[in-house]
Image (cartoon, rainbow, N blue to C red):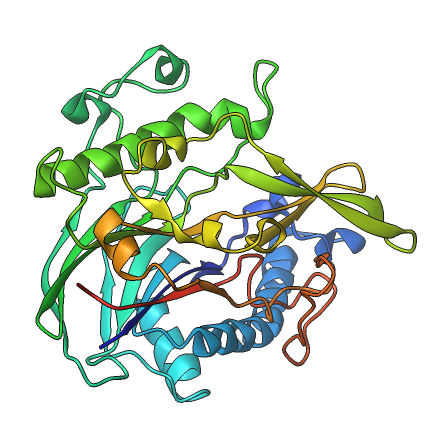
Length: 369
């Protein structure tokens, strides 16, 4: 009996328009900046037309990436609300590719843009084992005070009664063919702008570290501190942090070389430093673990893993011979692939857009102990 578990940041699956770009140039789409817009009303009409025209191709590719993952349980990030999830699941996953999900779960979280984590589940695995939800809990309201996690670094930008999770930690207790599996779905704080001499990653590191500590505390409360290793659980989502990267050195037309670099510090060290969970992506070759291409000009390019399936020691050991899969066909053409990793992209993929997402789905086939 096997279960296919996947995670995917689909990026801005929204049911609404954002018109703030008329007054805030930083939020205005680059194509509209090419035109002289005479009034806010005209801007709103153009923005609506732009979004609608671009969305269908984008969501077709998103659906194709999900279909290629072929997961029994799919953890998603950046979902606007249940209405958006239902419309996408029915109109694209089910009707377009015949790969629908009857069970859908979403709890509104804390993100200021309204993007949430969600879970789609089939009623049965591909092997015919029933997938049952026994309980679901949101931890969006948990504060630093609740878990005694407040410290001097957090005090620079937060208060002790602020919520820990910038989106949520959605906890699901499942039975897969009668066997227990606990699932923790997260989307950690994104890397912000430089502040106080620190780059965007370092300046937001304390927030992600607190989120990782809180996830660990939730799991230890669930199973008992010191008793988690033998349990079956997985932590899935976009962690917005990485423990290593692949620097892309060079530029288009002149060629590239790829240099693997470990990170001295990461919020994810909370999970890995003592073997609390295993990042199964580390079973792949160092240049082939990435799920996102980051670029700000030729001097700042790298590949990194932002999307994770962390397995408990018992679950990892029970699946010791297996590797996670990465679905990269939805990447835009601007993404630089190391030699031998090139893929045939989905039809109509653009240089930068349309695309399935900047993120790649990660999927793992698991046997449950």
